[in-house]
Figure 1 (tube, rainbow, N blue to C red):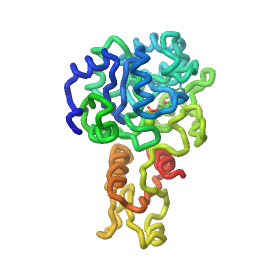
Figure 2 (cartoon, rainbow, N blue to C red; figure 1 turned 90 degrees about the vertical axis):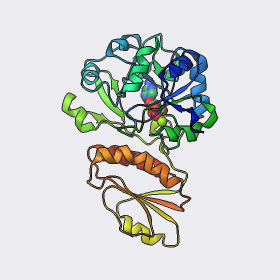
Figure 3 (cartoon, rainbow, N blue to C red; figure 1 turned 60 degrees about the vertical axis):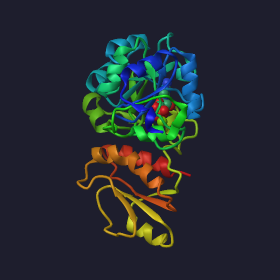
Figure 4 (cartoon, helix red, strand yellow; figure 1 turned 120 degrees about the horizontal axis):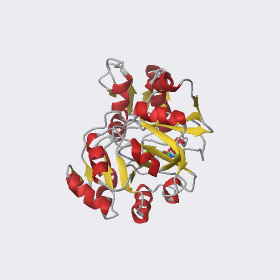
Length: 319
Ligand code: AMP
Ligand code: MG
């Protein structure tokens, strides 16, 4: 299975040039990438992921100059954000350029775009004459992949290469910002905190809805979900009491239960949000593989990346 994991960047160039898909490393999560101008490749992304066509894809470019070939208009605050945070975990939703195929944008007149901050993928993008569309490299609705093995496990023989870039440094998806007229609106909380964004452009509103057909369909109420029933609670110990006959797995922020009978993952012993976010999905993958009856996850403090982590945990636990 793991033979598809390889560091061979020339192989990735050749596959992508031939309308095939390659899973690529980014600092957020692994992406399932294809040439934005290849209808064959883009259709394959949707079918491999079993992703509905109403859910548009993020376009990945290698430099701000390339934005002109993707977007027809860039608001002033988008320019400020791009120069402050790119390459990085911020996706901008902008009016699309005619060259961007409708399949990518699900027929919308806007396109989501970012420069990922991963040296291998930046190198790959620089070798290619086209941008890459890349949604997260997981089947629709399941836990996003943060390690090459997660992708290989999901797609086995359906893709030919996972370009090995190690574990994703940030570990949760990008923050998505769109513009209503010239006003920035956060559509998805993510790896770049609202606090950091507001430090650069001032107060932003957040429309992080849990709807069934939201503006950014990554915002579906149930998403990023393990197969095991998962609960999100403030008091883990109290919740454990209610499930005493069950095989329980626990996911906490910084505190250990010190109980050998319970499978437990502590995300950051020293209480760092960045570390917890980076380890979150790998921990969910790990607990999900243990045949537990239930996973009990601890709610994070509602500030900084704690907000984004709670968002993912809520969607993972929504029924
Ligand atoms: P992922 O599949 O994890 O990479 O998620 C991509 C996210 O970007 C999804 O939530 C999409 O709905 C969102 N997205 C992509 N294009 C647009 C767009 N034009 N407008 C709003 N959201 C978008
Ligand atoms: Mg996704």
